[in-house]
Amino acid sequence: MDEVRATAGWVASHASHVSIDSAALAKLVDETQGSIPKVAWNFEGIHYSDDGPLTVQYLLVLDALNFCFWPDKDLNYDHLAMGLREALEKDRSALDADRLQKYSGPQLRDLLKWPRPLPLEEERLRLLHEVQISVLPAFPGSHVGEVLERSFGGKAVNLVKACEKSAVKLVSLVAQQFPDHAVYKGHQIFLYKRAQIFAADLWGAFKGQGYGDFRDICIITIFADYIVPAVLRQLGVLKYSVDLSNAIDAKKEITSGSEEEIELRACSVHAVEKMRELLELKFGKQVLSIDIDLWLWSFGIQTPSMPHHRTLSIYY
Ligand SMILES: Nc1nc2c(c(CN[C@H]3C=C[C@H](O)[C@@H]3O)cn2[C@@H]2O[C@H](COP(=O)(O)O)[C@@H](O)[C@H]2O)c(=O)[nH]1
Image (spheres, rainbow, N blue to C red):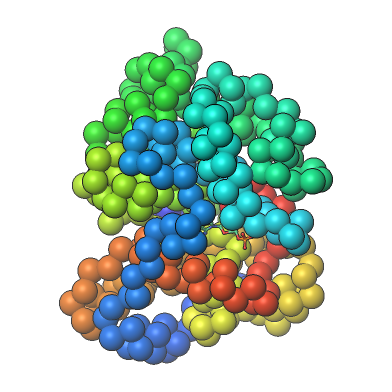
């Protein structure tokens, strides 16, 4: 996550399409009076949650598929969460590693109760089939790190246990299955949205206890998706070039890996890191990026008219 922070900062200082308005950021921080409204994890009541290992399995599968809902204007994240929840409520083995490998497109649609092909359905299926790779024994001689070489017996909970309460370990491990990299002006940029949100979801679902107990949770950054940049723009914290503003407002697709797309995501991460610094400086408050993220994101999904950038991506 140090890499996410550092590379997002590098993009922000070289950006040409997106900028951070320091005055608007300071004003927003002042308005919070040092306390970020606490939004409860699962405030929408959509998630499977039983305080046990099955919740961990659910969250790993959820975050494997947690990207790019917008191409179908009627589909959103809630459909994914509720579909997986109902599948587990009906059949507790629905997300077992051996079952994940076998899902077909129509079966995945059935699971989500979705009447037509999902956006990027082929990629969703591939990722679903591959989730089990992160929880099955690694093949001998593979390059994966020390932790992956142990056997997880097909259970996401064993992967979490092996990380010994380190969110950094968990994210680095999961990022091998859920990568999220870009090359920007010749530099490699790391954003790790789905891998980080998996650690944050565990922390939220288990209320920082048991499988959600991470001693280094403060290291996680926000999750650079298409909602948070839209909220930061609405709040005046992010400013876009005229061309980019027009493209987003006209719902034009922003190419994956383009400077514009990377700047939107990286400047969002950096703006929130700046916000944390200011909260500490002005109010002596240490705030988690996760809490700021949930506050901004929940505001965003309750304001669906807000224009967001549209990039076809499996990363977010
Ligand atoms: N930054 C950030 N992005 C998040 C989430 C979540 C859900 N987190 C769960 C954790 C606690 C809560 O209770 C939530 O249930 C989804 N997303 C992203 O939003 C987009 C979906 O938008 P729409 O098409 O309108 O459904 C898509 O890119 C999706 O990946 C988050 O928390 N932060």
